[in-house]
Image: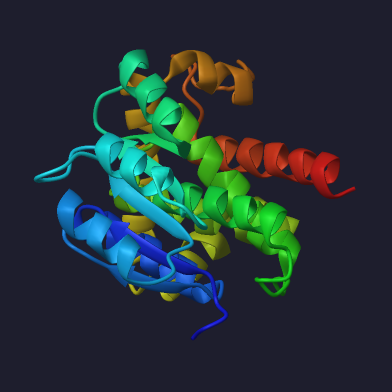
Length: 256
């Protein structure tokens, strides 16, 4: 029997695959199964399952029913992380009352979900996971992801990835900010196998999406009003610099 933390995921294919990739890198043993409540309950009964990540809407039996039955049985029970496309408070409350430890509204960022699961395991089973190498860089990546998720940059657009790469580069080498078009965009383009022009356009588009359709109050909370743009929206370089500064300050507070 494996001593690794076992995770079973009953979720949409793309989200499940992303979570699996992240969790396996952290040393988890991950299994993907169909979004079927009956099969999920059978899998939990078959062998040890430490963590379940599942959609609240499963065929045959929803996640609420699965949790109630799984947690009612004698012996160790898995920790449940439940996802839902509906943000009604009643659904979230029902999930927690049935036994969920984590609840996520879709669309969620797989990195954040995986990080919360990892954090939960590190608190309850600190010996189960090895300490990460390059902890500050990993923490920076998670912090950047949290900010982008909060202000409303969709994870599926290309600018999301490019902004994260840009902020990490500026954090590791502040001189990158002083040469955005000369070195920063080309460095990202080389890493992501695209062109500097496409990187610049994708980042600008991502900022526009967050500004026009995202959480404006969250945007102001993180970045304030200190921009040169007439409409208040930060330029690419301003956004990257402010994001990097926010992450740097946050990590200083968290890691000391």
